[in-house]
Image (cartoon, rainbow, N blue to C red; front, side, top):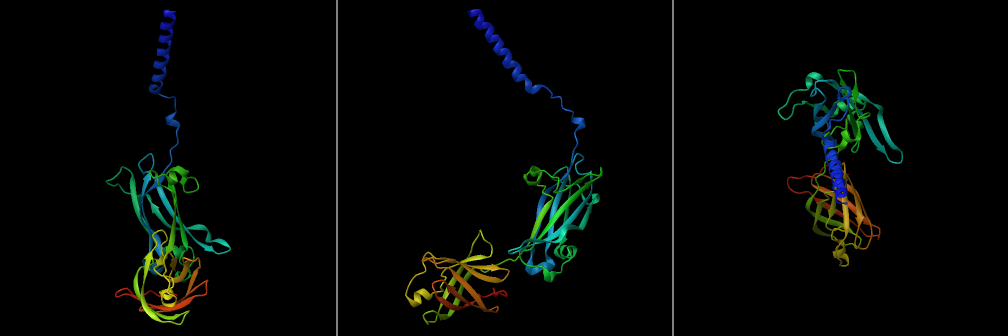
Length: 310
């Protein structure tokens, strides 16, 4: 029995030893037969939006790194293609043109050595004017909320093509690769209406008029939206009296078009209509679903005139 236990121990030790040695065996993989591809790592997204109010100076700009078996030297050209996209309410997406078109081509000579890695890099930009012309539109036809879809097509010296249609999900989205080959560039309308303003209540549902102050606070998670300190602009206090309390009403700025949303502490919702707008005074009427209303003239602050709001 003692000899049997000893023999079993030797067998177990041998199995453990053989198992532990498996990691050191060179696998029989035909490395020389592997095919290698190429991709464009996104190093910097210098500019990925167009300013609706300043299209003349807007641009799409990236810094790219060519990654391949020759440290970027297999790249022959990179096509930069674009199409315009707009969401039509009740209809869906409309593309102009239907298929993307060439707007610019990068040559192999555009990729240069850099001090941060062994791979060749390039930086490029496409102006909003170039993109608009390429898709066959004019600046007057562009609206806030439109999107320009840029797509890169890498052609290498072996006659192969790499783009968004044949890139894997991991290469496209993983931080290490960062190579989507496709970049949406939105037409945005920067908004800067946060602040505390003086106003005159020109009309209220109870007939009283008065002056006061209102504070608009930017909503971090929703650019262009501002919570107002009192959705009735003091009318409750003047007419009842009542306090605003926990109401949550917002003024929303969509490319200088103002709307009001949210509810007060009683659950009534709010809307607004702009009556007039000058650099000095913004006048609008607010209404809630309870039937209360008022017209206020909100004064701009020194050095910060109102934009052309509507």
